Image 1 (cartoon, rainbow, N blue to C red):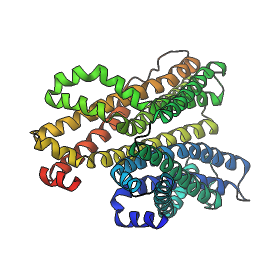
Image 2: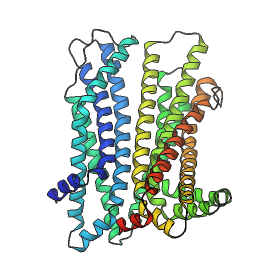
Image 3: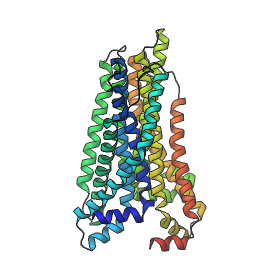
Image 4: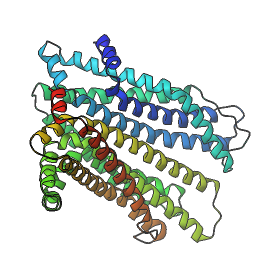
Length: 446
């Protein structure tokens, strides 16, 4: 099965491109930030500088590990799901589920290793840029020399490979069960339990905000972690959330988009489990970006209003939060684009069948656009709820005001990025797919 995995990757590189890009970017981010631990461990680095570098490396490295897993999982799930016919054929010719699992995991390990190797150079460059940024802002002494060692390399390679193997294992279990018509109730129960645990932990983190003193530097940690865990919980419940949203949006979508709207609602209902992989990064991006940006803006405004000079610790915290938001924005956008491109390009035969049944290219594009709009509204809605759950208690404790004074500008910017990435990717990919004649698109699938 290992040789079959190598041949599969070699003969179909385009199918693994999205996963390779996710693994490459994830490994680069993890190695760049974890290399700050190598830099902090040098003999000539002072305690204060070592603490600053270790803080940034630890916090961002932890966020990065979570993001890498979700990014690789979403792209691998789409990849494996699209190979349902291939997996069914292997099962019918005598391959066992364990053999298919080893084949897909072997492919994931190969792609993860390649992505890690390609990321070493960019990670070293990114680590130097990060160190220079801290030195330019006076948070780290200019005499500190950059070092890229076993911590950075081991963390990047280890987490990327672990995420690839774990995501491949979960995706192939789902595909083999679908191919053998086995019930998926245990998997749904496991997802529900994990979602409830994340929501409960997120709620506890948000409530813990009221037990922390307003002047405590670590005040932001509890609501920020709570918002992140709530976003994860909503992301795990994506299929159910999408079905619930469709029940309420079916009539408005049908009234506005006509025939395309009716087809959109029908398609979304049938493809809700697959489209959940798109809602996951969309919900995470909206919740984490909204919550972190508003809380950091509130913290900066509270310090300025107090008339006190900002300490090095305050600048460190602001830098960490802004860097985390930057990573979330970039990584979530890449994950969205990868997942949407793979999912939409795979529907070329479906588009061809719709056109042979009488749908015009404009109606097909209208359907894809309406689908993207429903997904965007659903992901933004629950991501915003998760973000607000962290923002409101933090604002009440820190400024004694329930609502922040910053207005909706930050939220509108986050929504614009999410909607732009979703709509542009799906419509652009669908337009390219529609250039293929309908008969040819259906014939290729057959």
